[in-house]
Image (cartoon, rainbow, N blue to C red):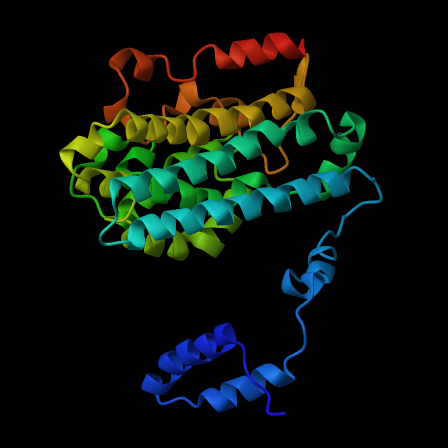
Length: 321
């Protein structure tokens, strides 16, 4: 008896033929390749064995693995965010609905990160942390380039320039000039001398060219630039402006301040204040009320800008006393 293909199989074969034949490709060859392809396993698809082999502590202290794994999770979330930024920036016909959906995804990723940070704040033994951290110098979370790319993809680069240098820099500054005056450099200076830490020097050596190139690419593709190209009614849509404000506060207030909470817990030991692993000036760098880093100042009232981050630090300090 001659084999009869089911109608749905014939329909799929027809669709595949319509895909490959116009490209000068042989459908039969692709089907033969499929025949010889092995079944896909979950562990192969996500490279599970490789993923689980990427935790390589520098010490024998067990809680160091918590520190490594959580930072790796953080970087994967940043990668998820950057994929959303890419799709926002690369879509020449983006709609308000699609723009809002992408913003919500980014905020969801940051909400997960912020809400999970107790893995670091409460989940490590303080004594172990203060011991294994000495084996990590001069490495620092400050050196997360993906977080810097998130910032650049969120706003006009001028909003990331150190607040004391913005006026002096002028309106015709290049990306190179603005990256040279970027706010985060002030956070990676020696507390006593004000000179650049090794943490910052190594970071600049590895990433400056990449950051400048990314800033050029996103000059007209960042979230603020895309928002300004939306129709006027979309720019006035409360759902969109609220999503923008949430992104601003998540990246510039809530995320730095959960780090501040962790730093206070582990490094603030009266009467001594312990330096961060990279020697960064975390007391001045992490609290947003000092940096006044705001992606979308136009979406906040003067009072909200003036009180940016105020009260949060004092509340955290009271909680930890």
